[in-house]
Length: 385
Image (cartoon, rainbow, N blue to C red; front, side, top):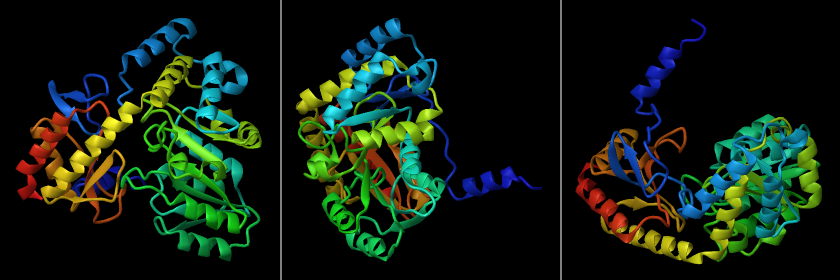
């Protein structure tokens, strides 16, 4: 049979890699209700606790009353409303760029930007652990696509030097979504500038979290003015939905003309943009959220290390516990759920073979007692790993 879907599904089940959505009966936040039971939620990317913030929710509700619940069209037809424009201007100012352009999702922002910038005859270089959206964009672009060793600036420099392409684009995550570590942006920029290449940074997990004002990885590493293409998402630390690309006026005009995922899709609801204006402002002027979050990160890392768990090199809210075996990671995740603690087991192909893990994510909405409860559940189940 040409399409034997059952065999593919059975093979995934047999390898302990079958995935299913967890049905939540309530909003994203510090806790989550699953099967009628409240759990502590250590799965979400709501790093600043803004997804359910009363001011953000009120802004969304008020904007929905005024602007409705759908934009009705693409930005270039009649879907570009005043809150969209205001948010683009605010994001440009926040990230220190001339302009910013909204996309409906981070996946669409990455595909739109990369395929608009490079194509046949160009060269594209990506970190081996980049997000799937970046890798898919590379395949779709038609450019000569190379991947370099994770966070290895020397490997990148070598690949750039060997390329004779007229246009060269280097793409990296700012904070890697499954490892939680940061890209060495200064070293990448040195390599790019030596070879007349551009650097694009996907800062989905850095925006809002890193830097004193939450301006992201490039600001935190002191290189923001050197990064030509900056992408950020709104559905993680900022607590809403959507994404944007920020850069020069020429970059944004290029994306408006050539980014198919911008041209040919309906704009996000104006209410989402209005709510994001509030969450962006709160992320900037409430540094106590980041201070509390960083304290929780350190508390967790100390406790997990004392219990003998293998942590990865991360000082961000993404705190993976490396397990290795797929079945063991699933078993520990289920044991924690029995203790009323939600932590996802991440397995290949999302992570490399033999690197299954529990991806703990911390939020400013969590309390010290919540982290201690997570550590207590891990202590009870340490013997199973």
